[in-house]
Image (cartoon, rainbow, N blue to C red; front, side, top):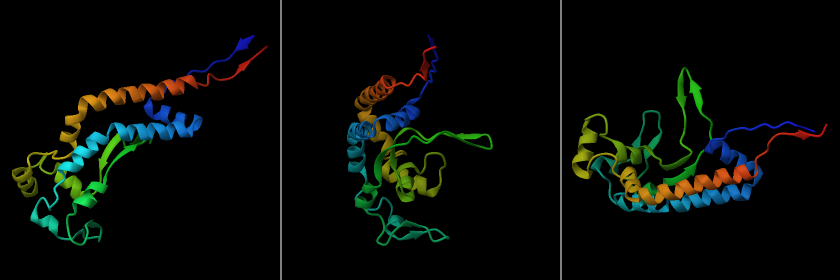
Length: 183
C-alpha cells in the first residue's frame, strides 16, 4: 500500500480562505465573533469622536480640485464619522510592486474617510499648522483609534488569540492531506 501525502502550512489569511471553502457558515460565525471581540474598542472610539467639528474649518464642505467630496454639505457630522468606524477581516494576498510589498492586516479596525483619518492622525510626523492646531486642542495623534485599542488591549488580545487558535483548529480538523492510493 502506497500513500501519497502533501502538507501545506497556512497562515491565518490562508486558513480563513480555506475555512470559507470548507464551511461558509462557520466562516461567517468567525466574522461575527471577531466583531463582538472588538466591539468594546469600537464603542470606546465612537464615544470620543467629537460631536462638533474638531476645528472650525471642518464645518465647511470640502472638495478636492478633482471634485472628490471630503466633507459633505453641512460639514463634520458625528453620526457620519461613527458609521465609518468598522471592524473588517481581509484575506487579500500580499502584493508586490517594484520591490515594495503591501500586506493588508487580516483583522482590522478601520475608520475611513479623509476628514476622520486627518482628525485622528494629523500632526504625527510633521508639525504643520493643522497638526499643531489639532494637537493643541485635542492632544497628540492618534486621538481616537489607538487610545481606544490600548484601553481594551488585554481583553482583545486574549480573545483574538483564542479566535485565531479556533480558526487554525477548524482548518486542521478538515486538513486535506492529498490523495491516498492503494497499490
